[in-house]
Image (spheres, rainbow, N blue to C red):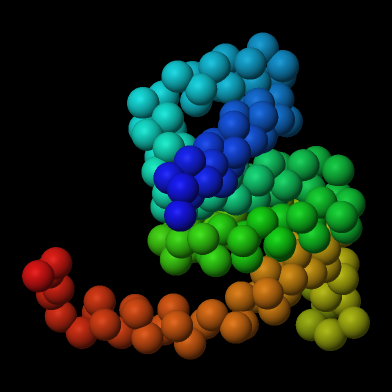
Length: 175
């Protein structure tokens, strides 16, 4: 019932997001870019505001940032645990706010953009067994990460679809 304890989880999520944005920027570019990114996020008025609210927005930003970090780390290292973290972070982001699905979709599409040159359709012989010759070597791990995310969000898919129908049925207003 104390306001401090209602806002404390969001504040913690906001602080952790600063660390994760540093790791993400360092993974993509270098440590200097990571420090600049972390500084810019730390002084961002929107980030400070949402980190003080007793709502889910700080968690949505945190989990999407973790998903992006895990994605880029997995694309570089091609390790199963990075793809697992990617799947868990995608699911956690979706649990925190349904609109994070737009950011998550960009990651699933981004895989094909990053790996487009590794899809070698010239090796396709028309047989099912030759499919492994044309796909990147981490494609199965990418599918695994997506499967982890999908399995984890199964319990809330019906709620998501019901809310989507409500918003798609017509215009809505707040009163």
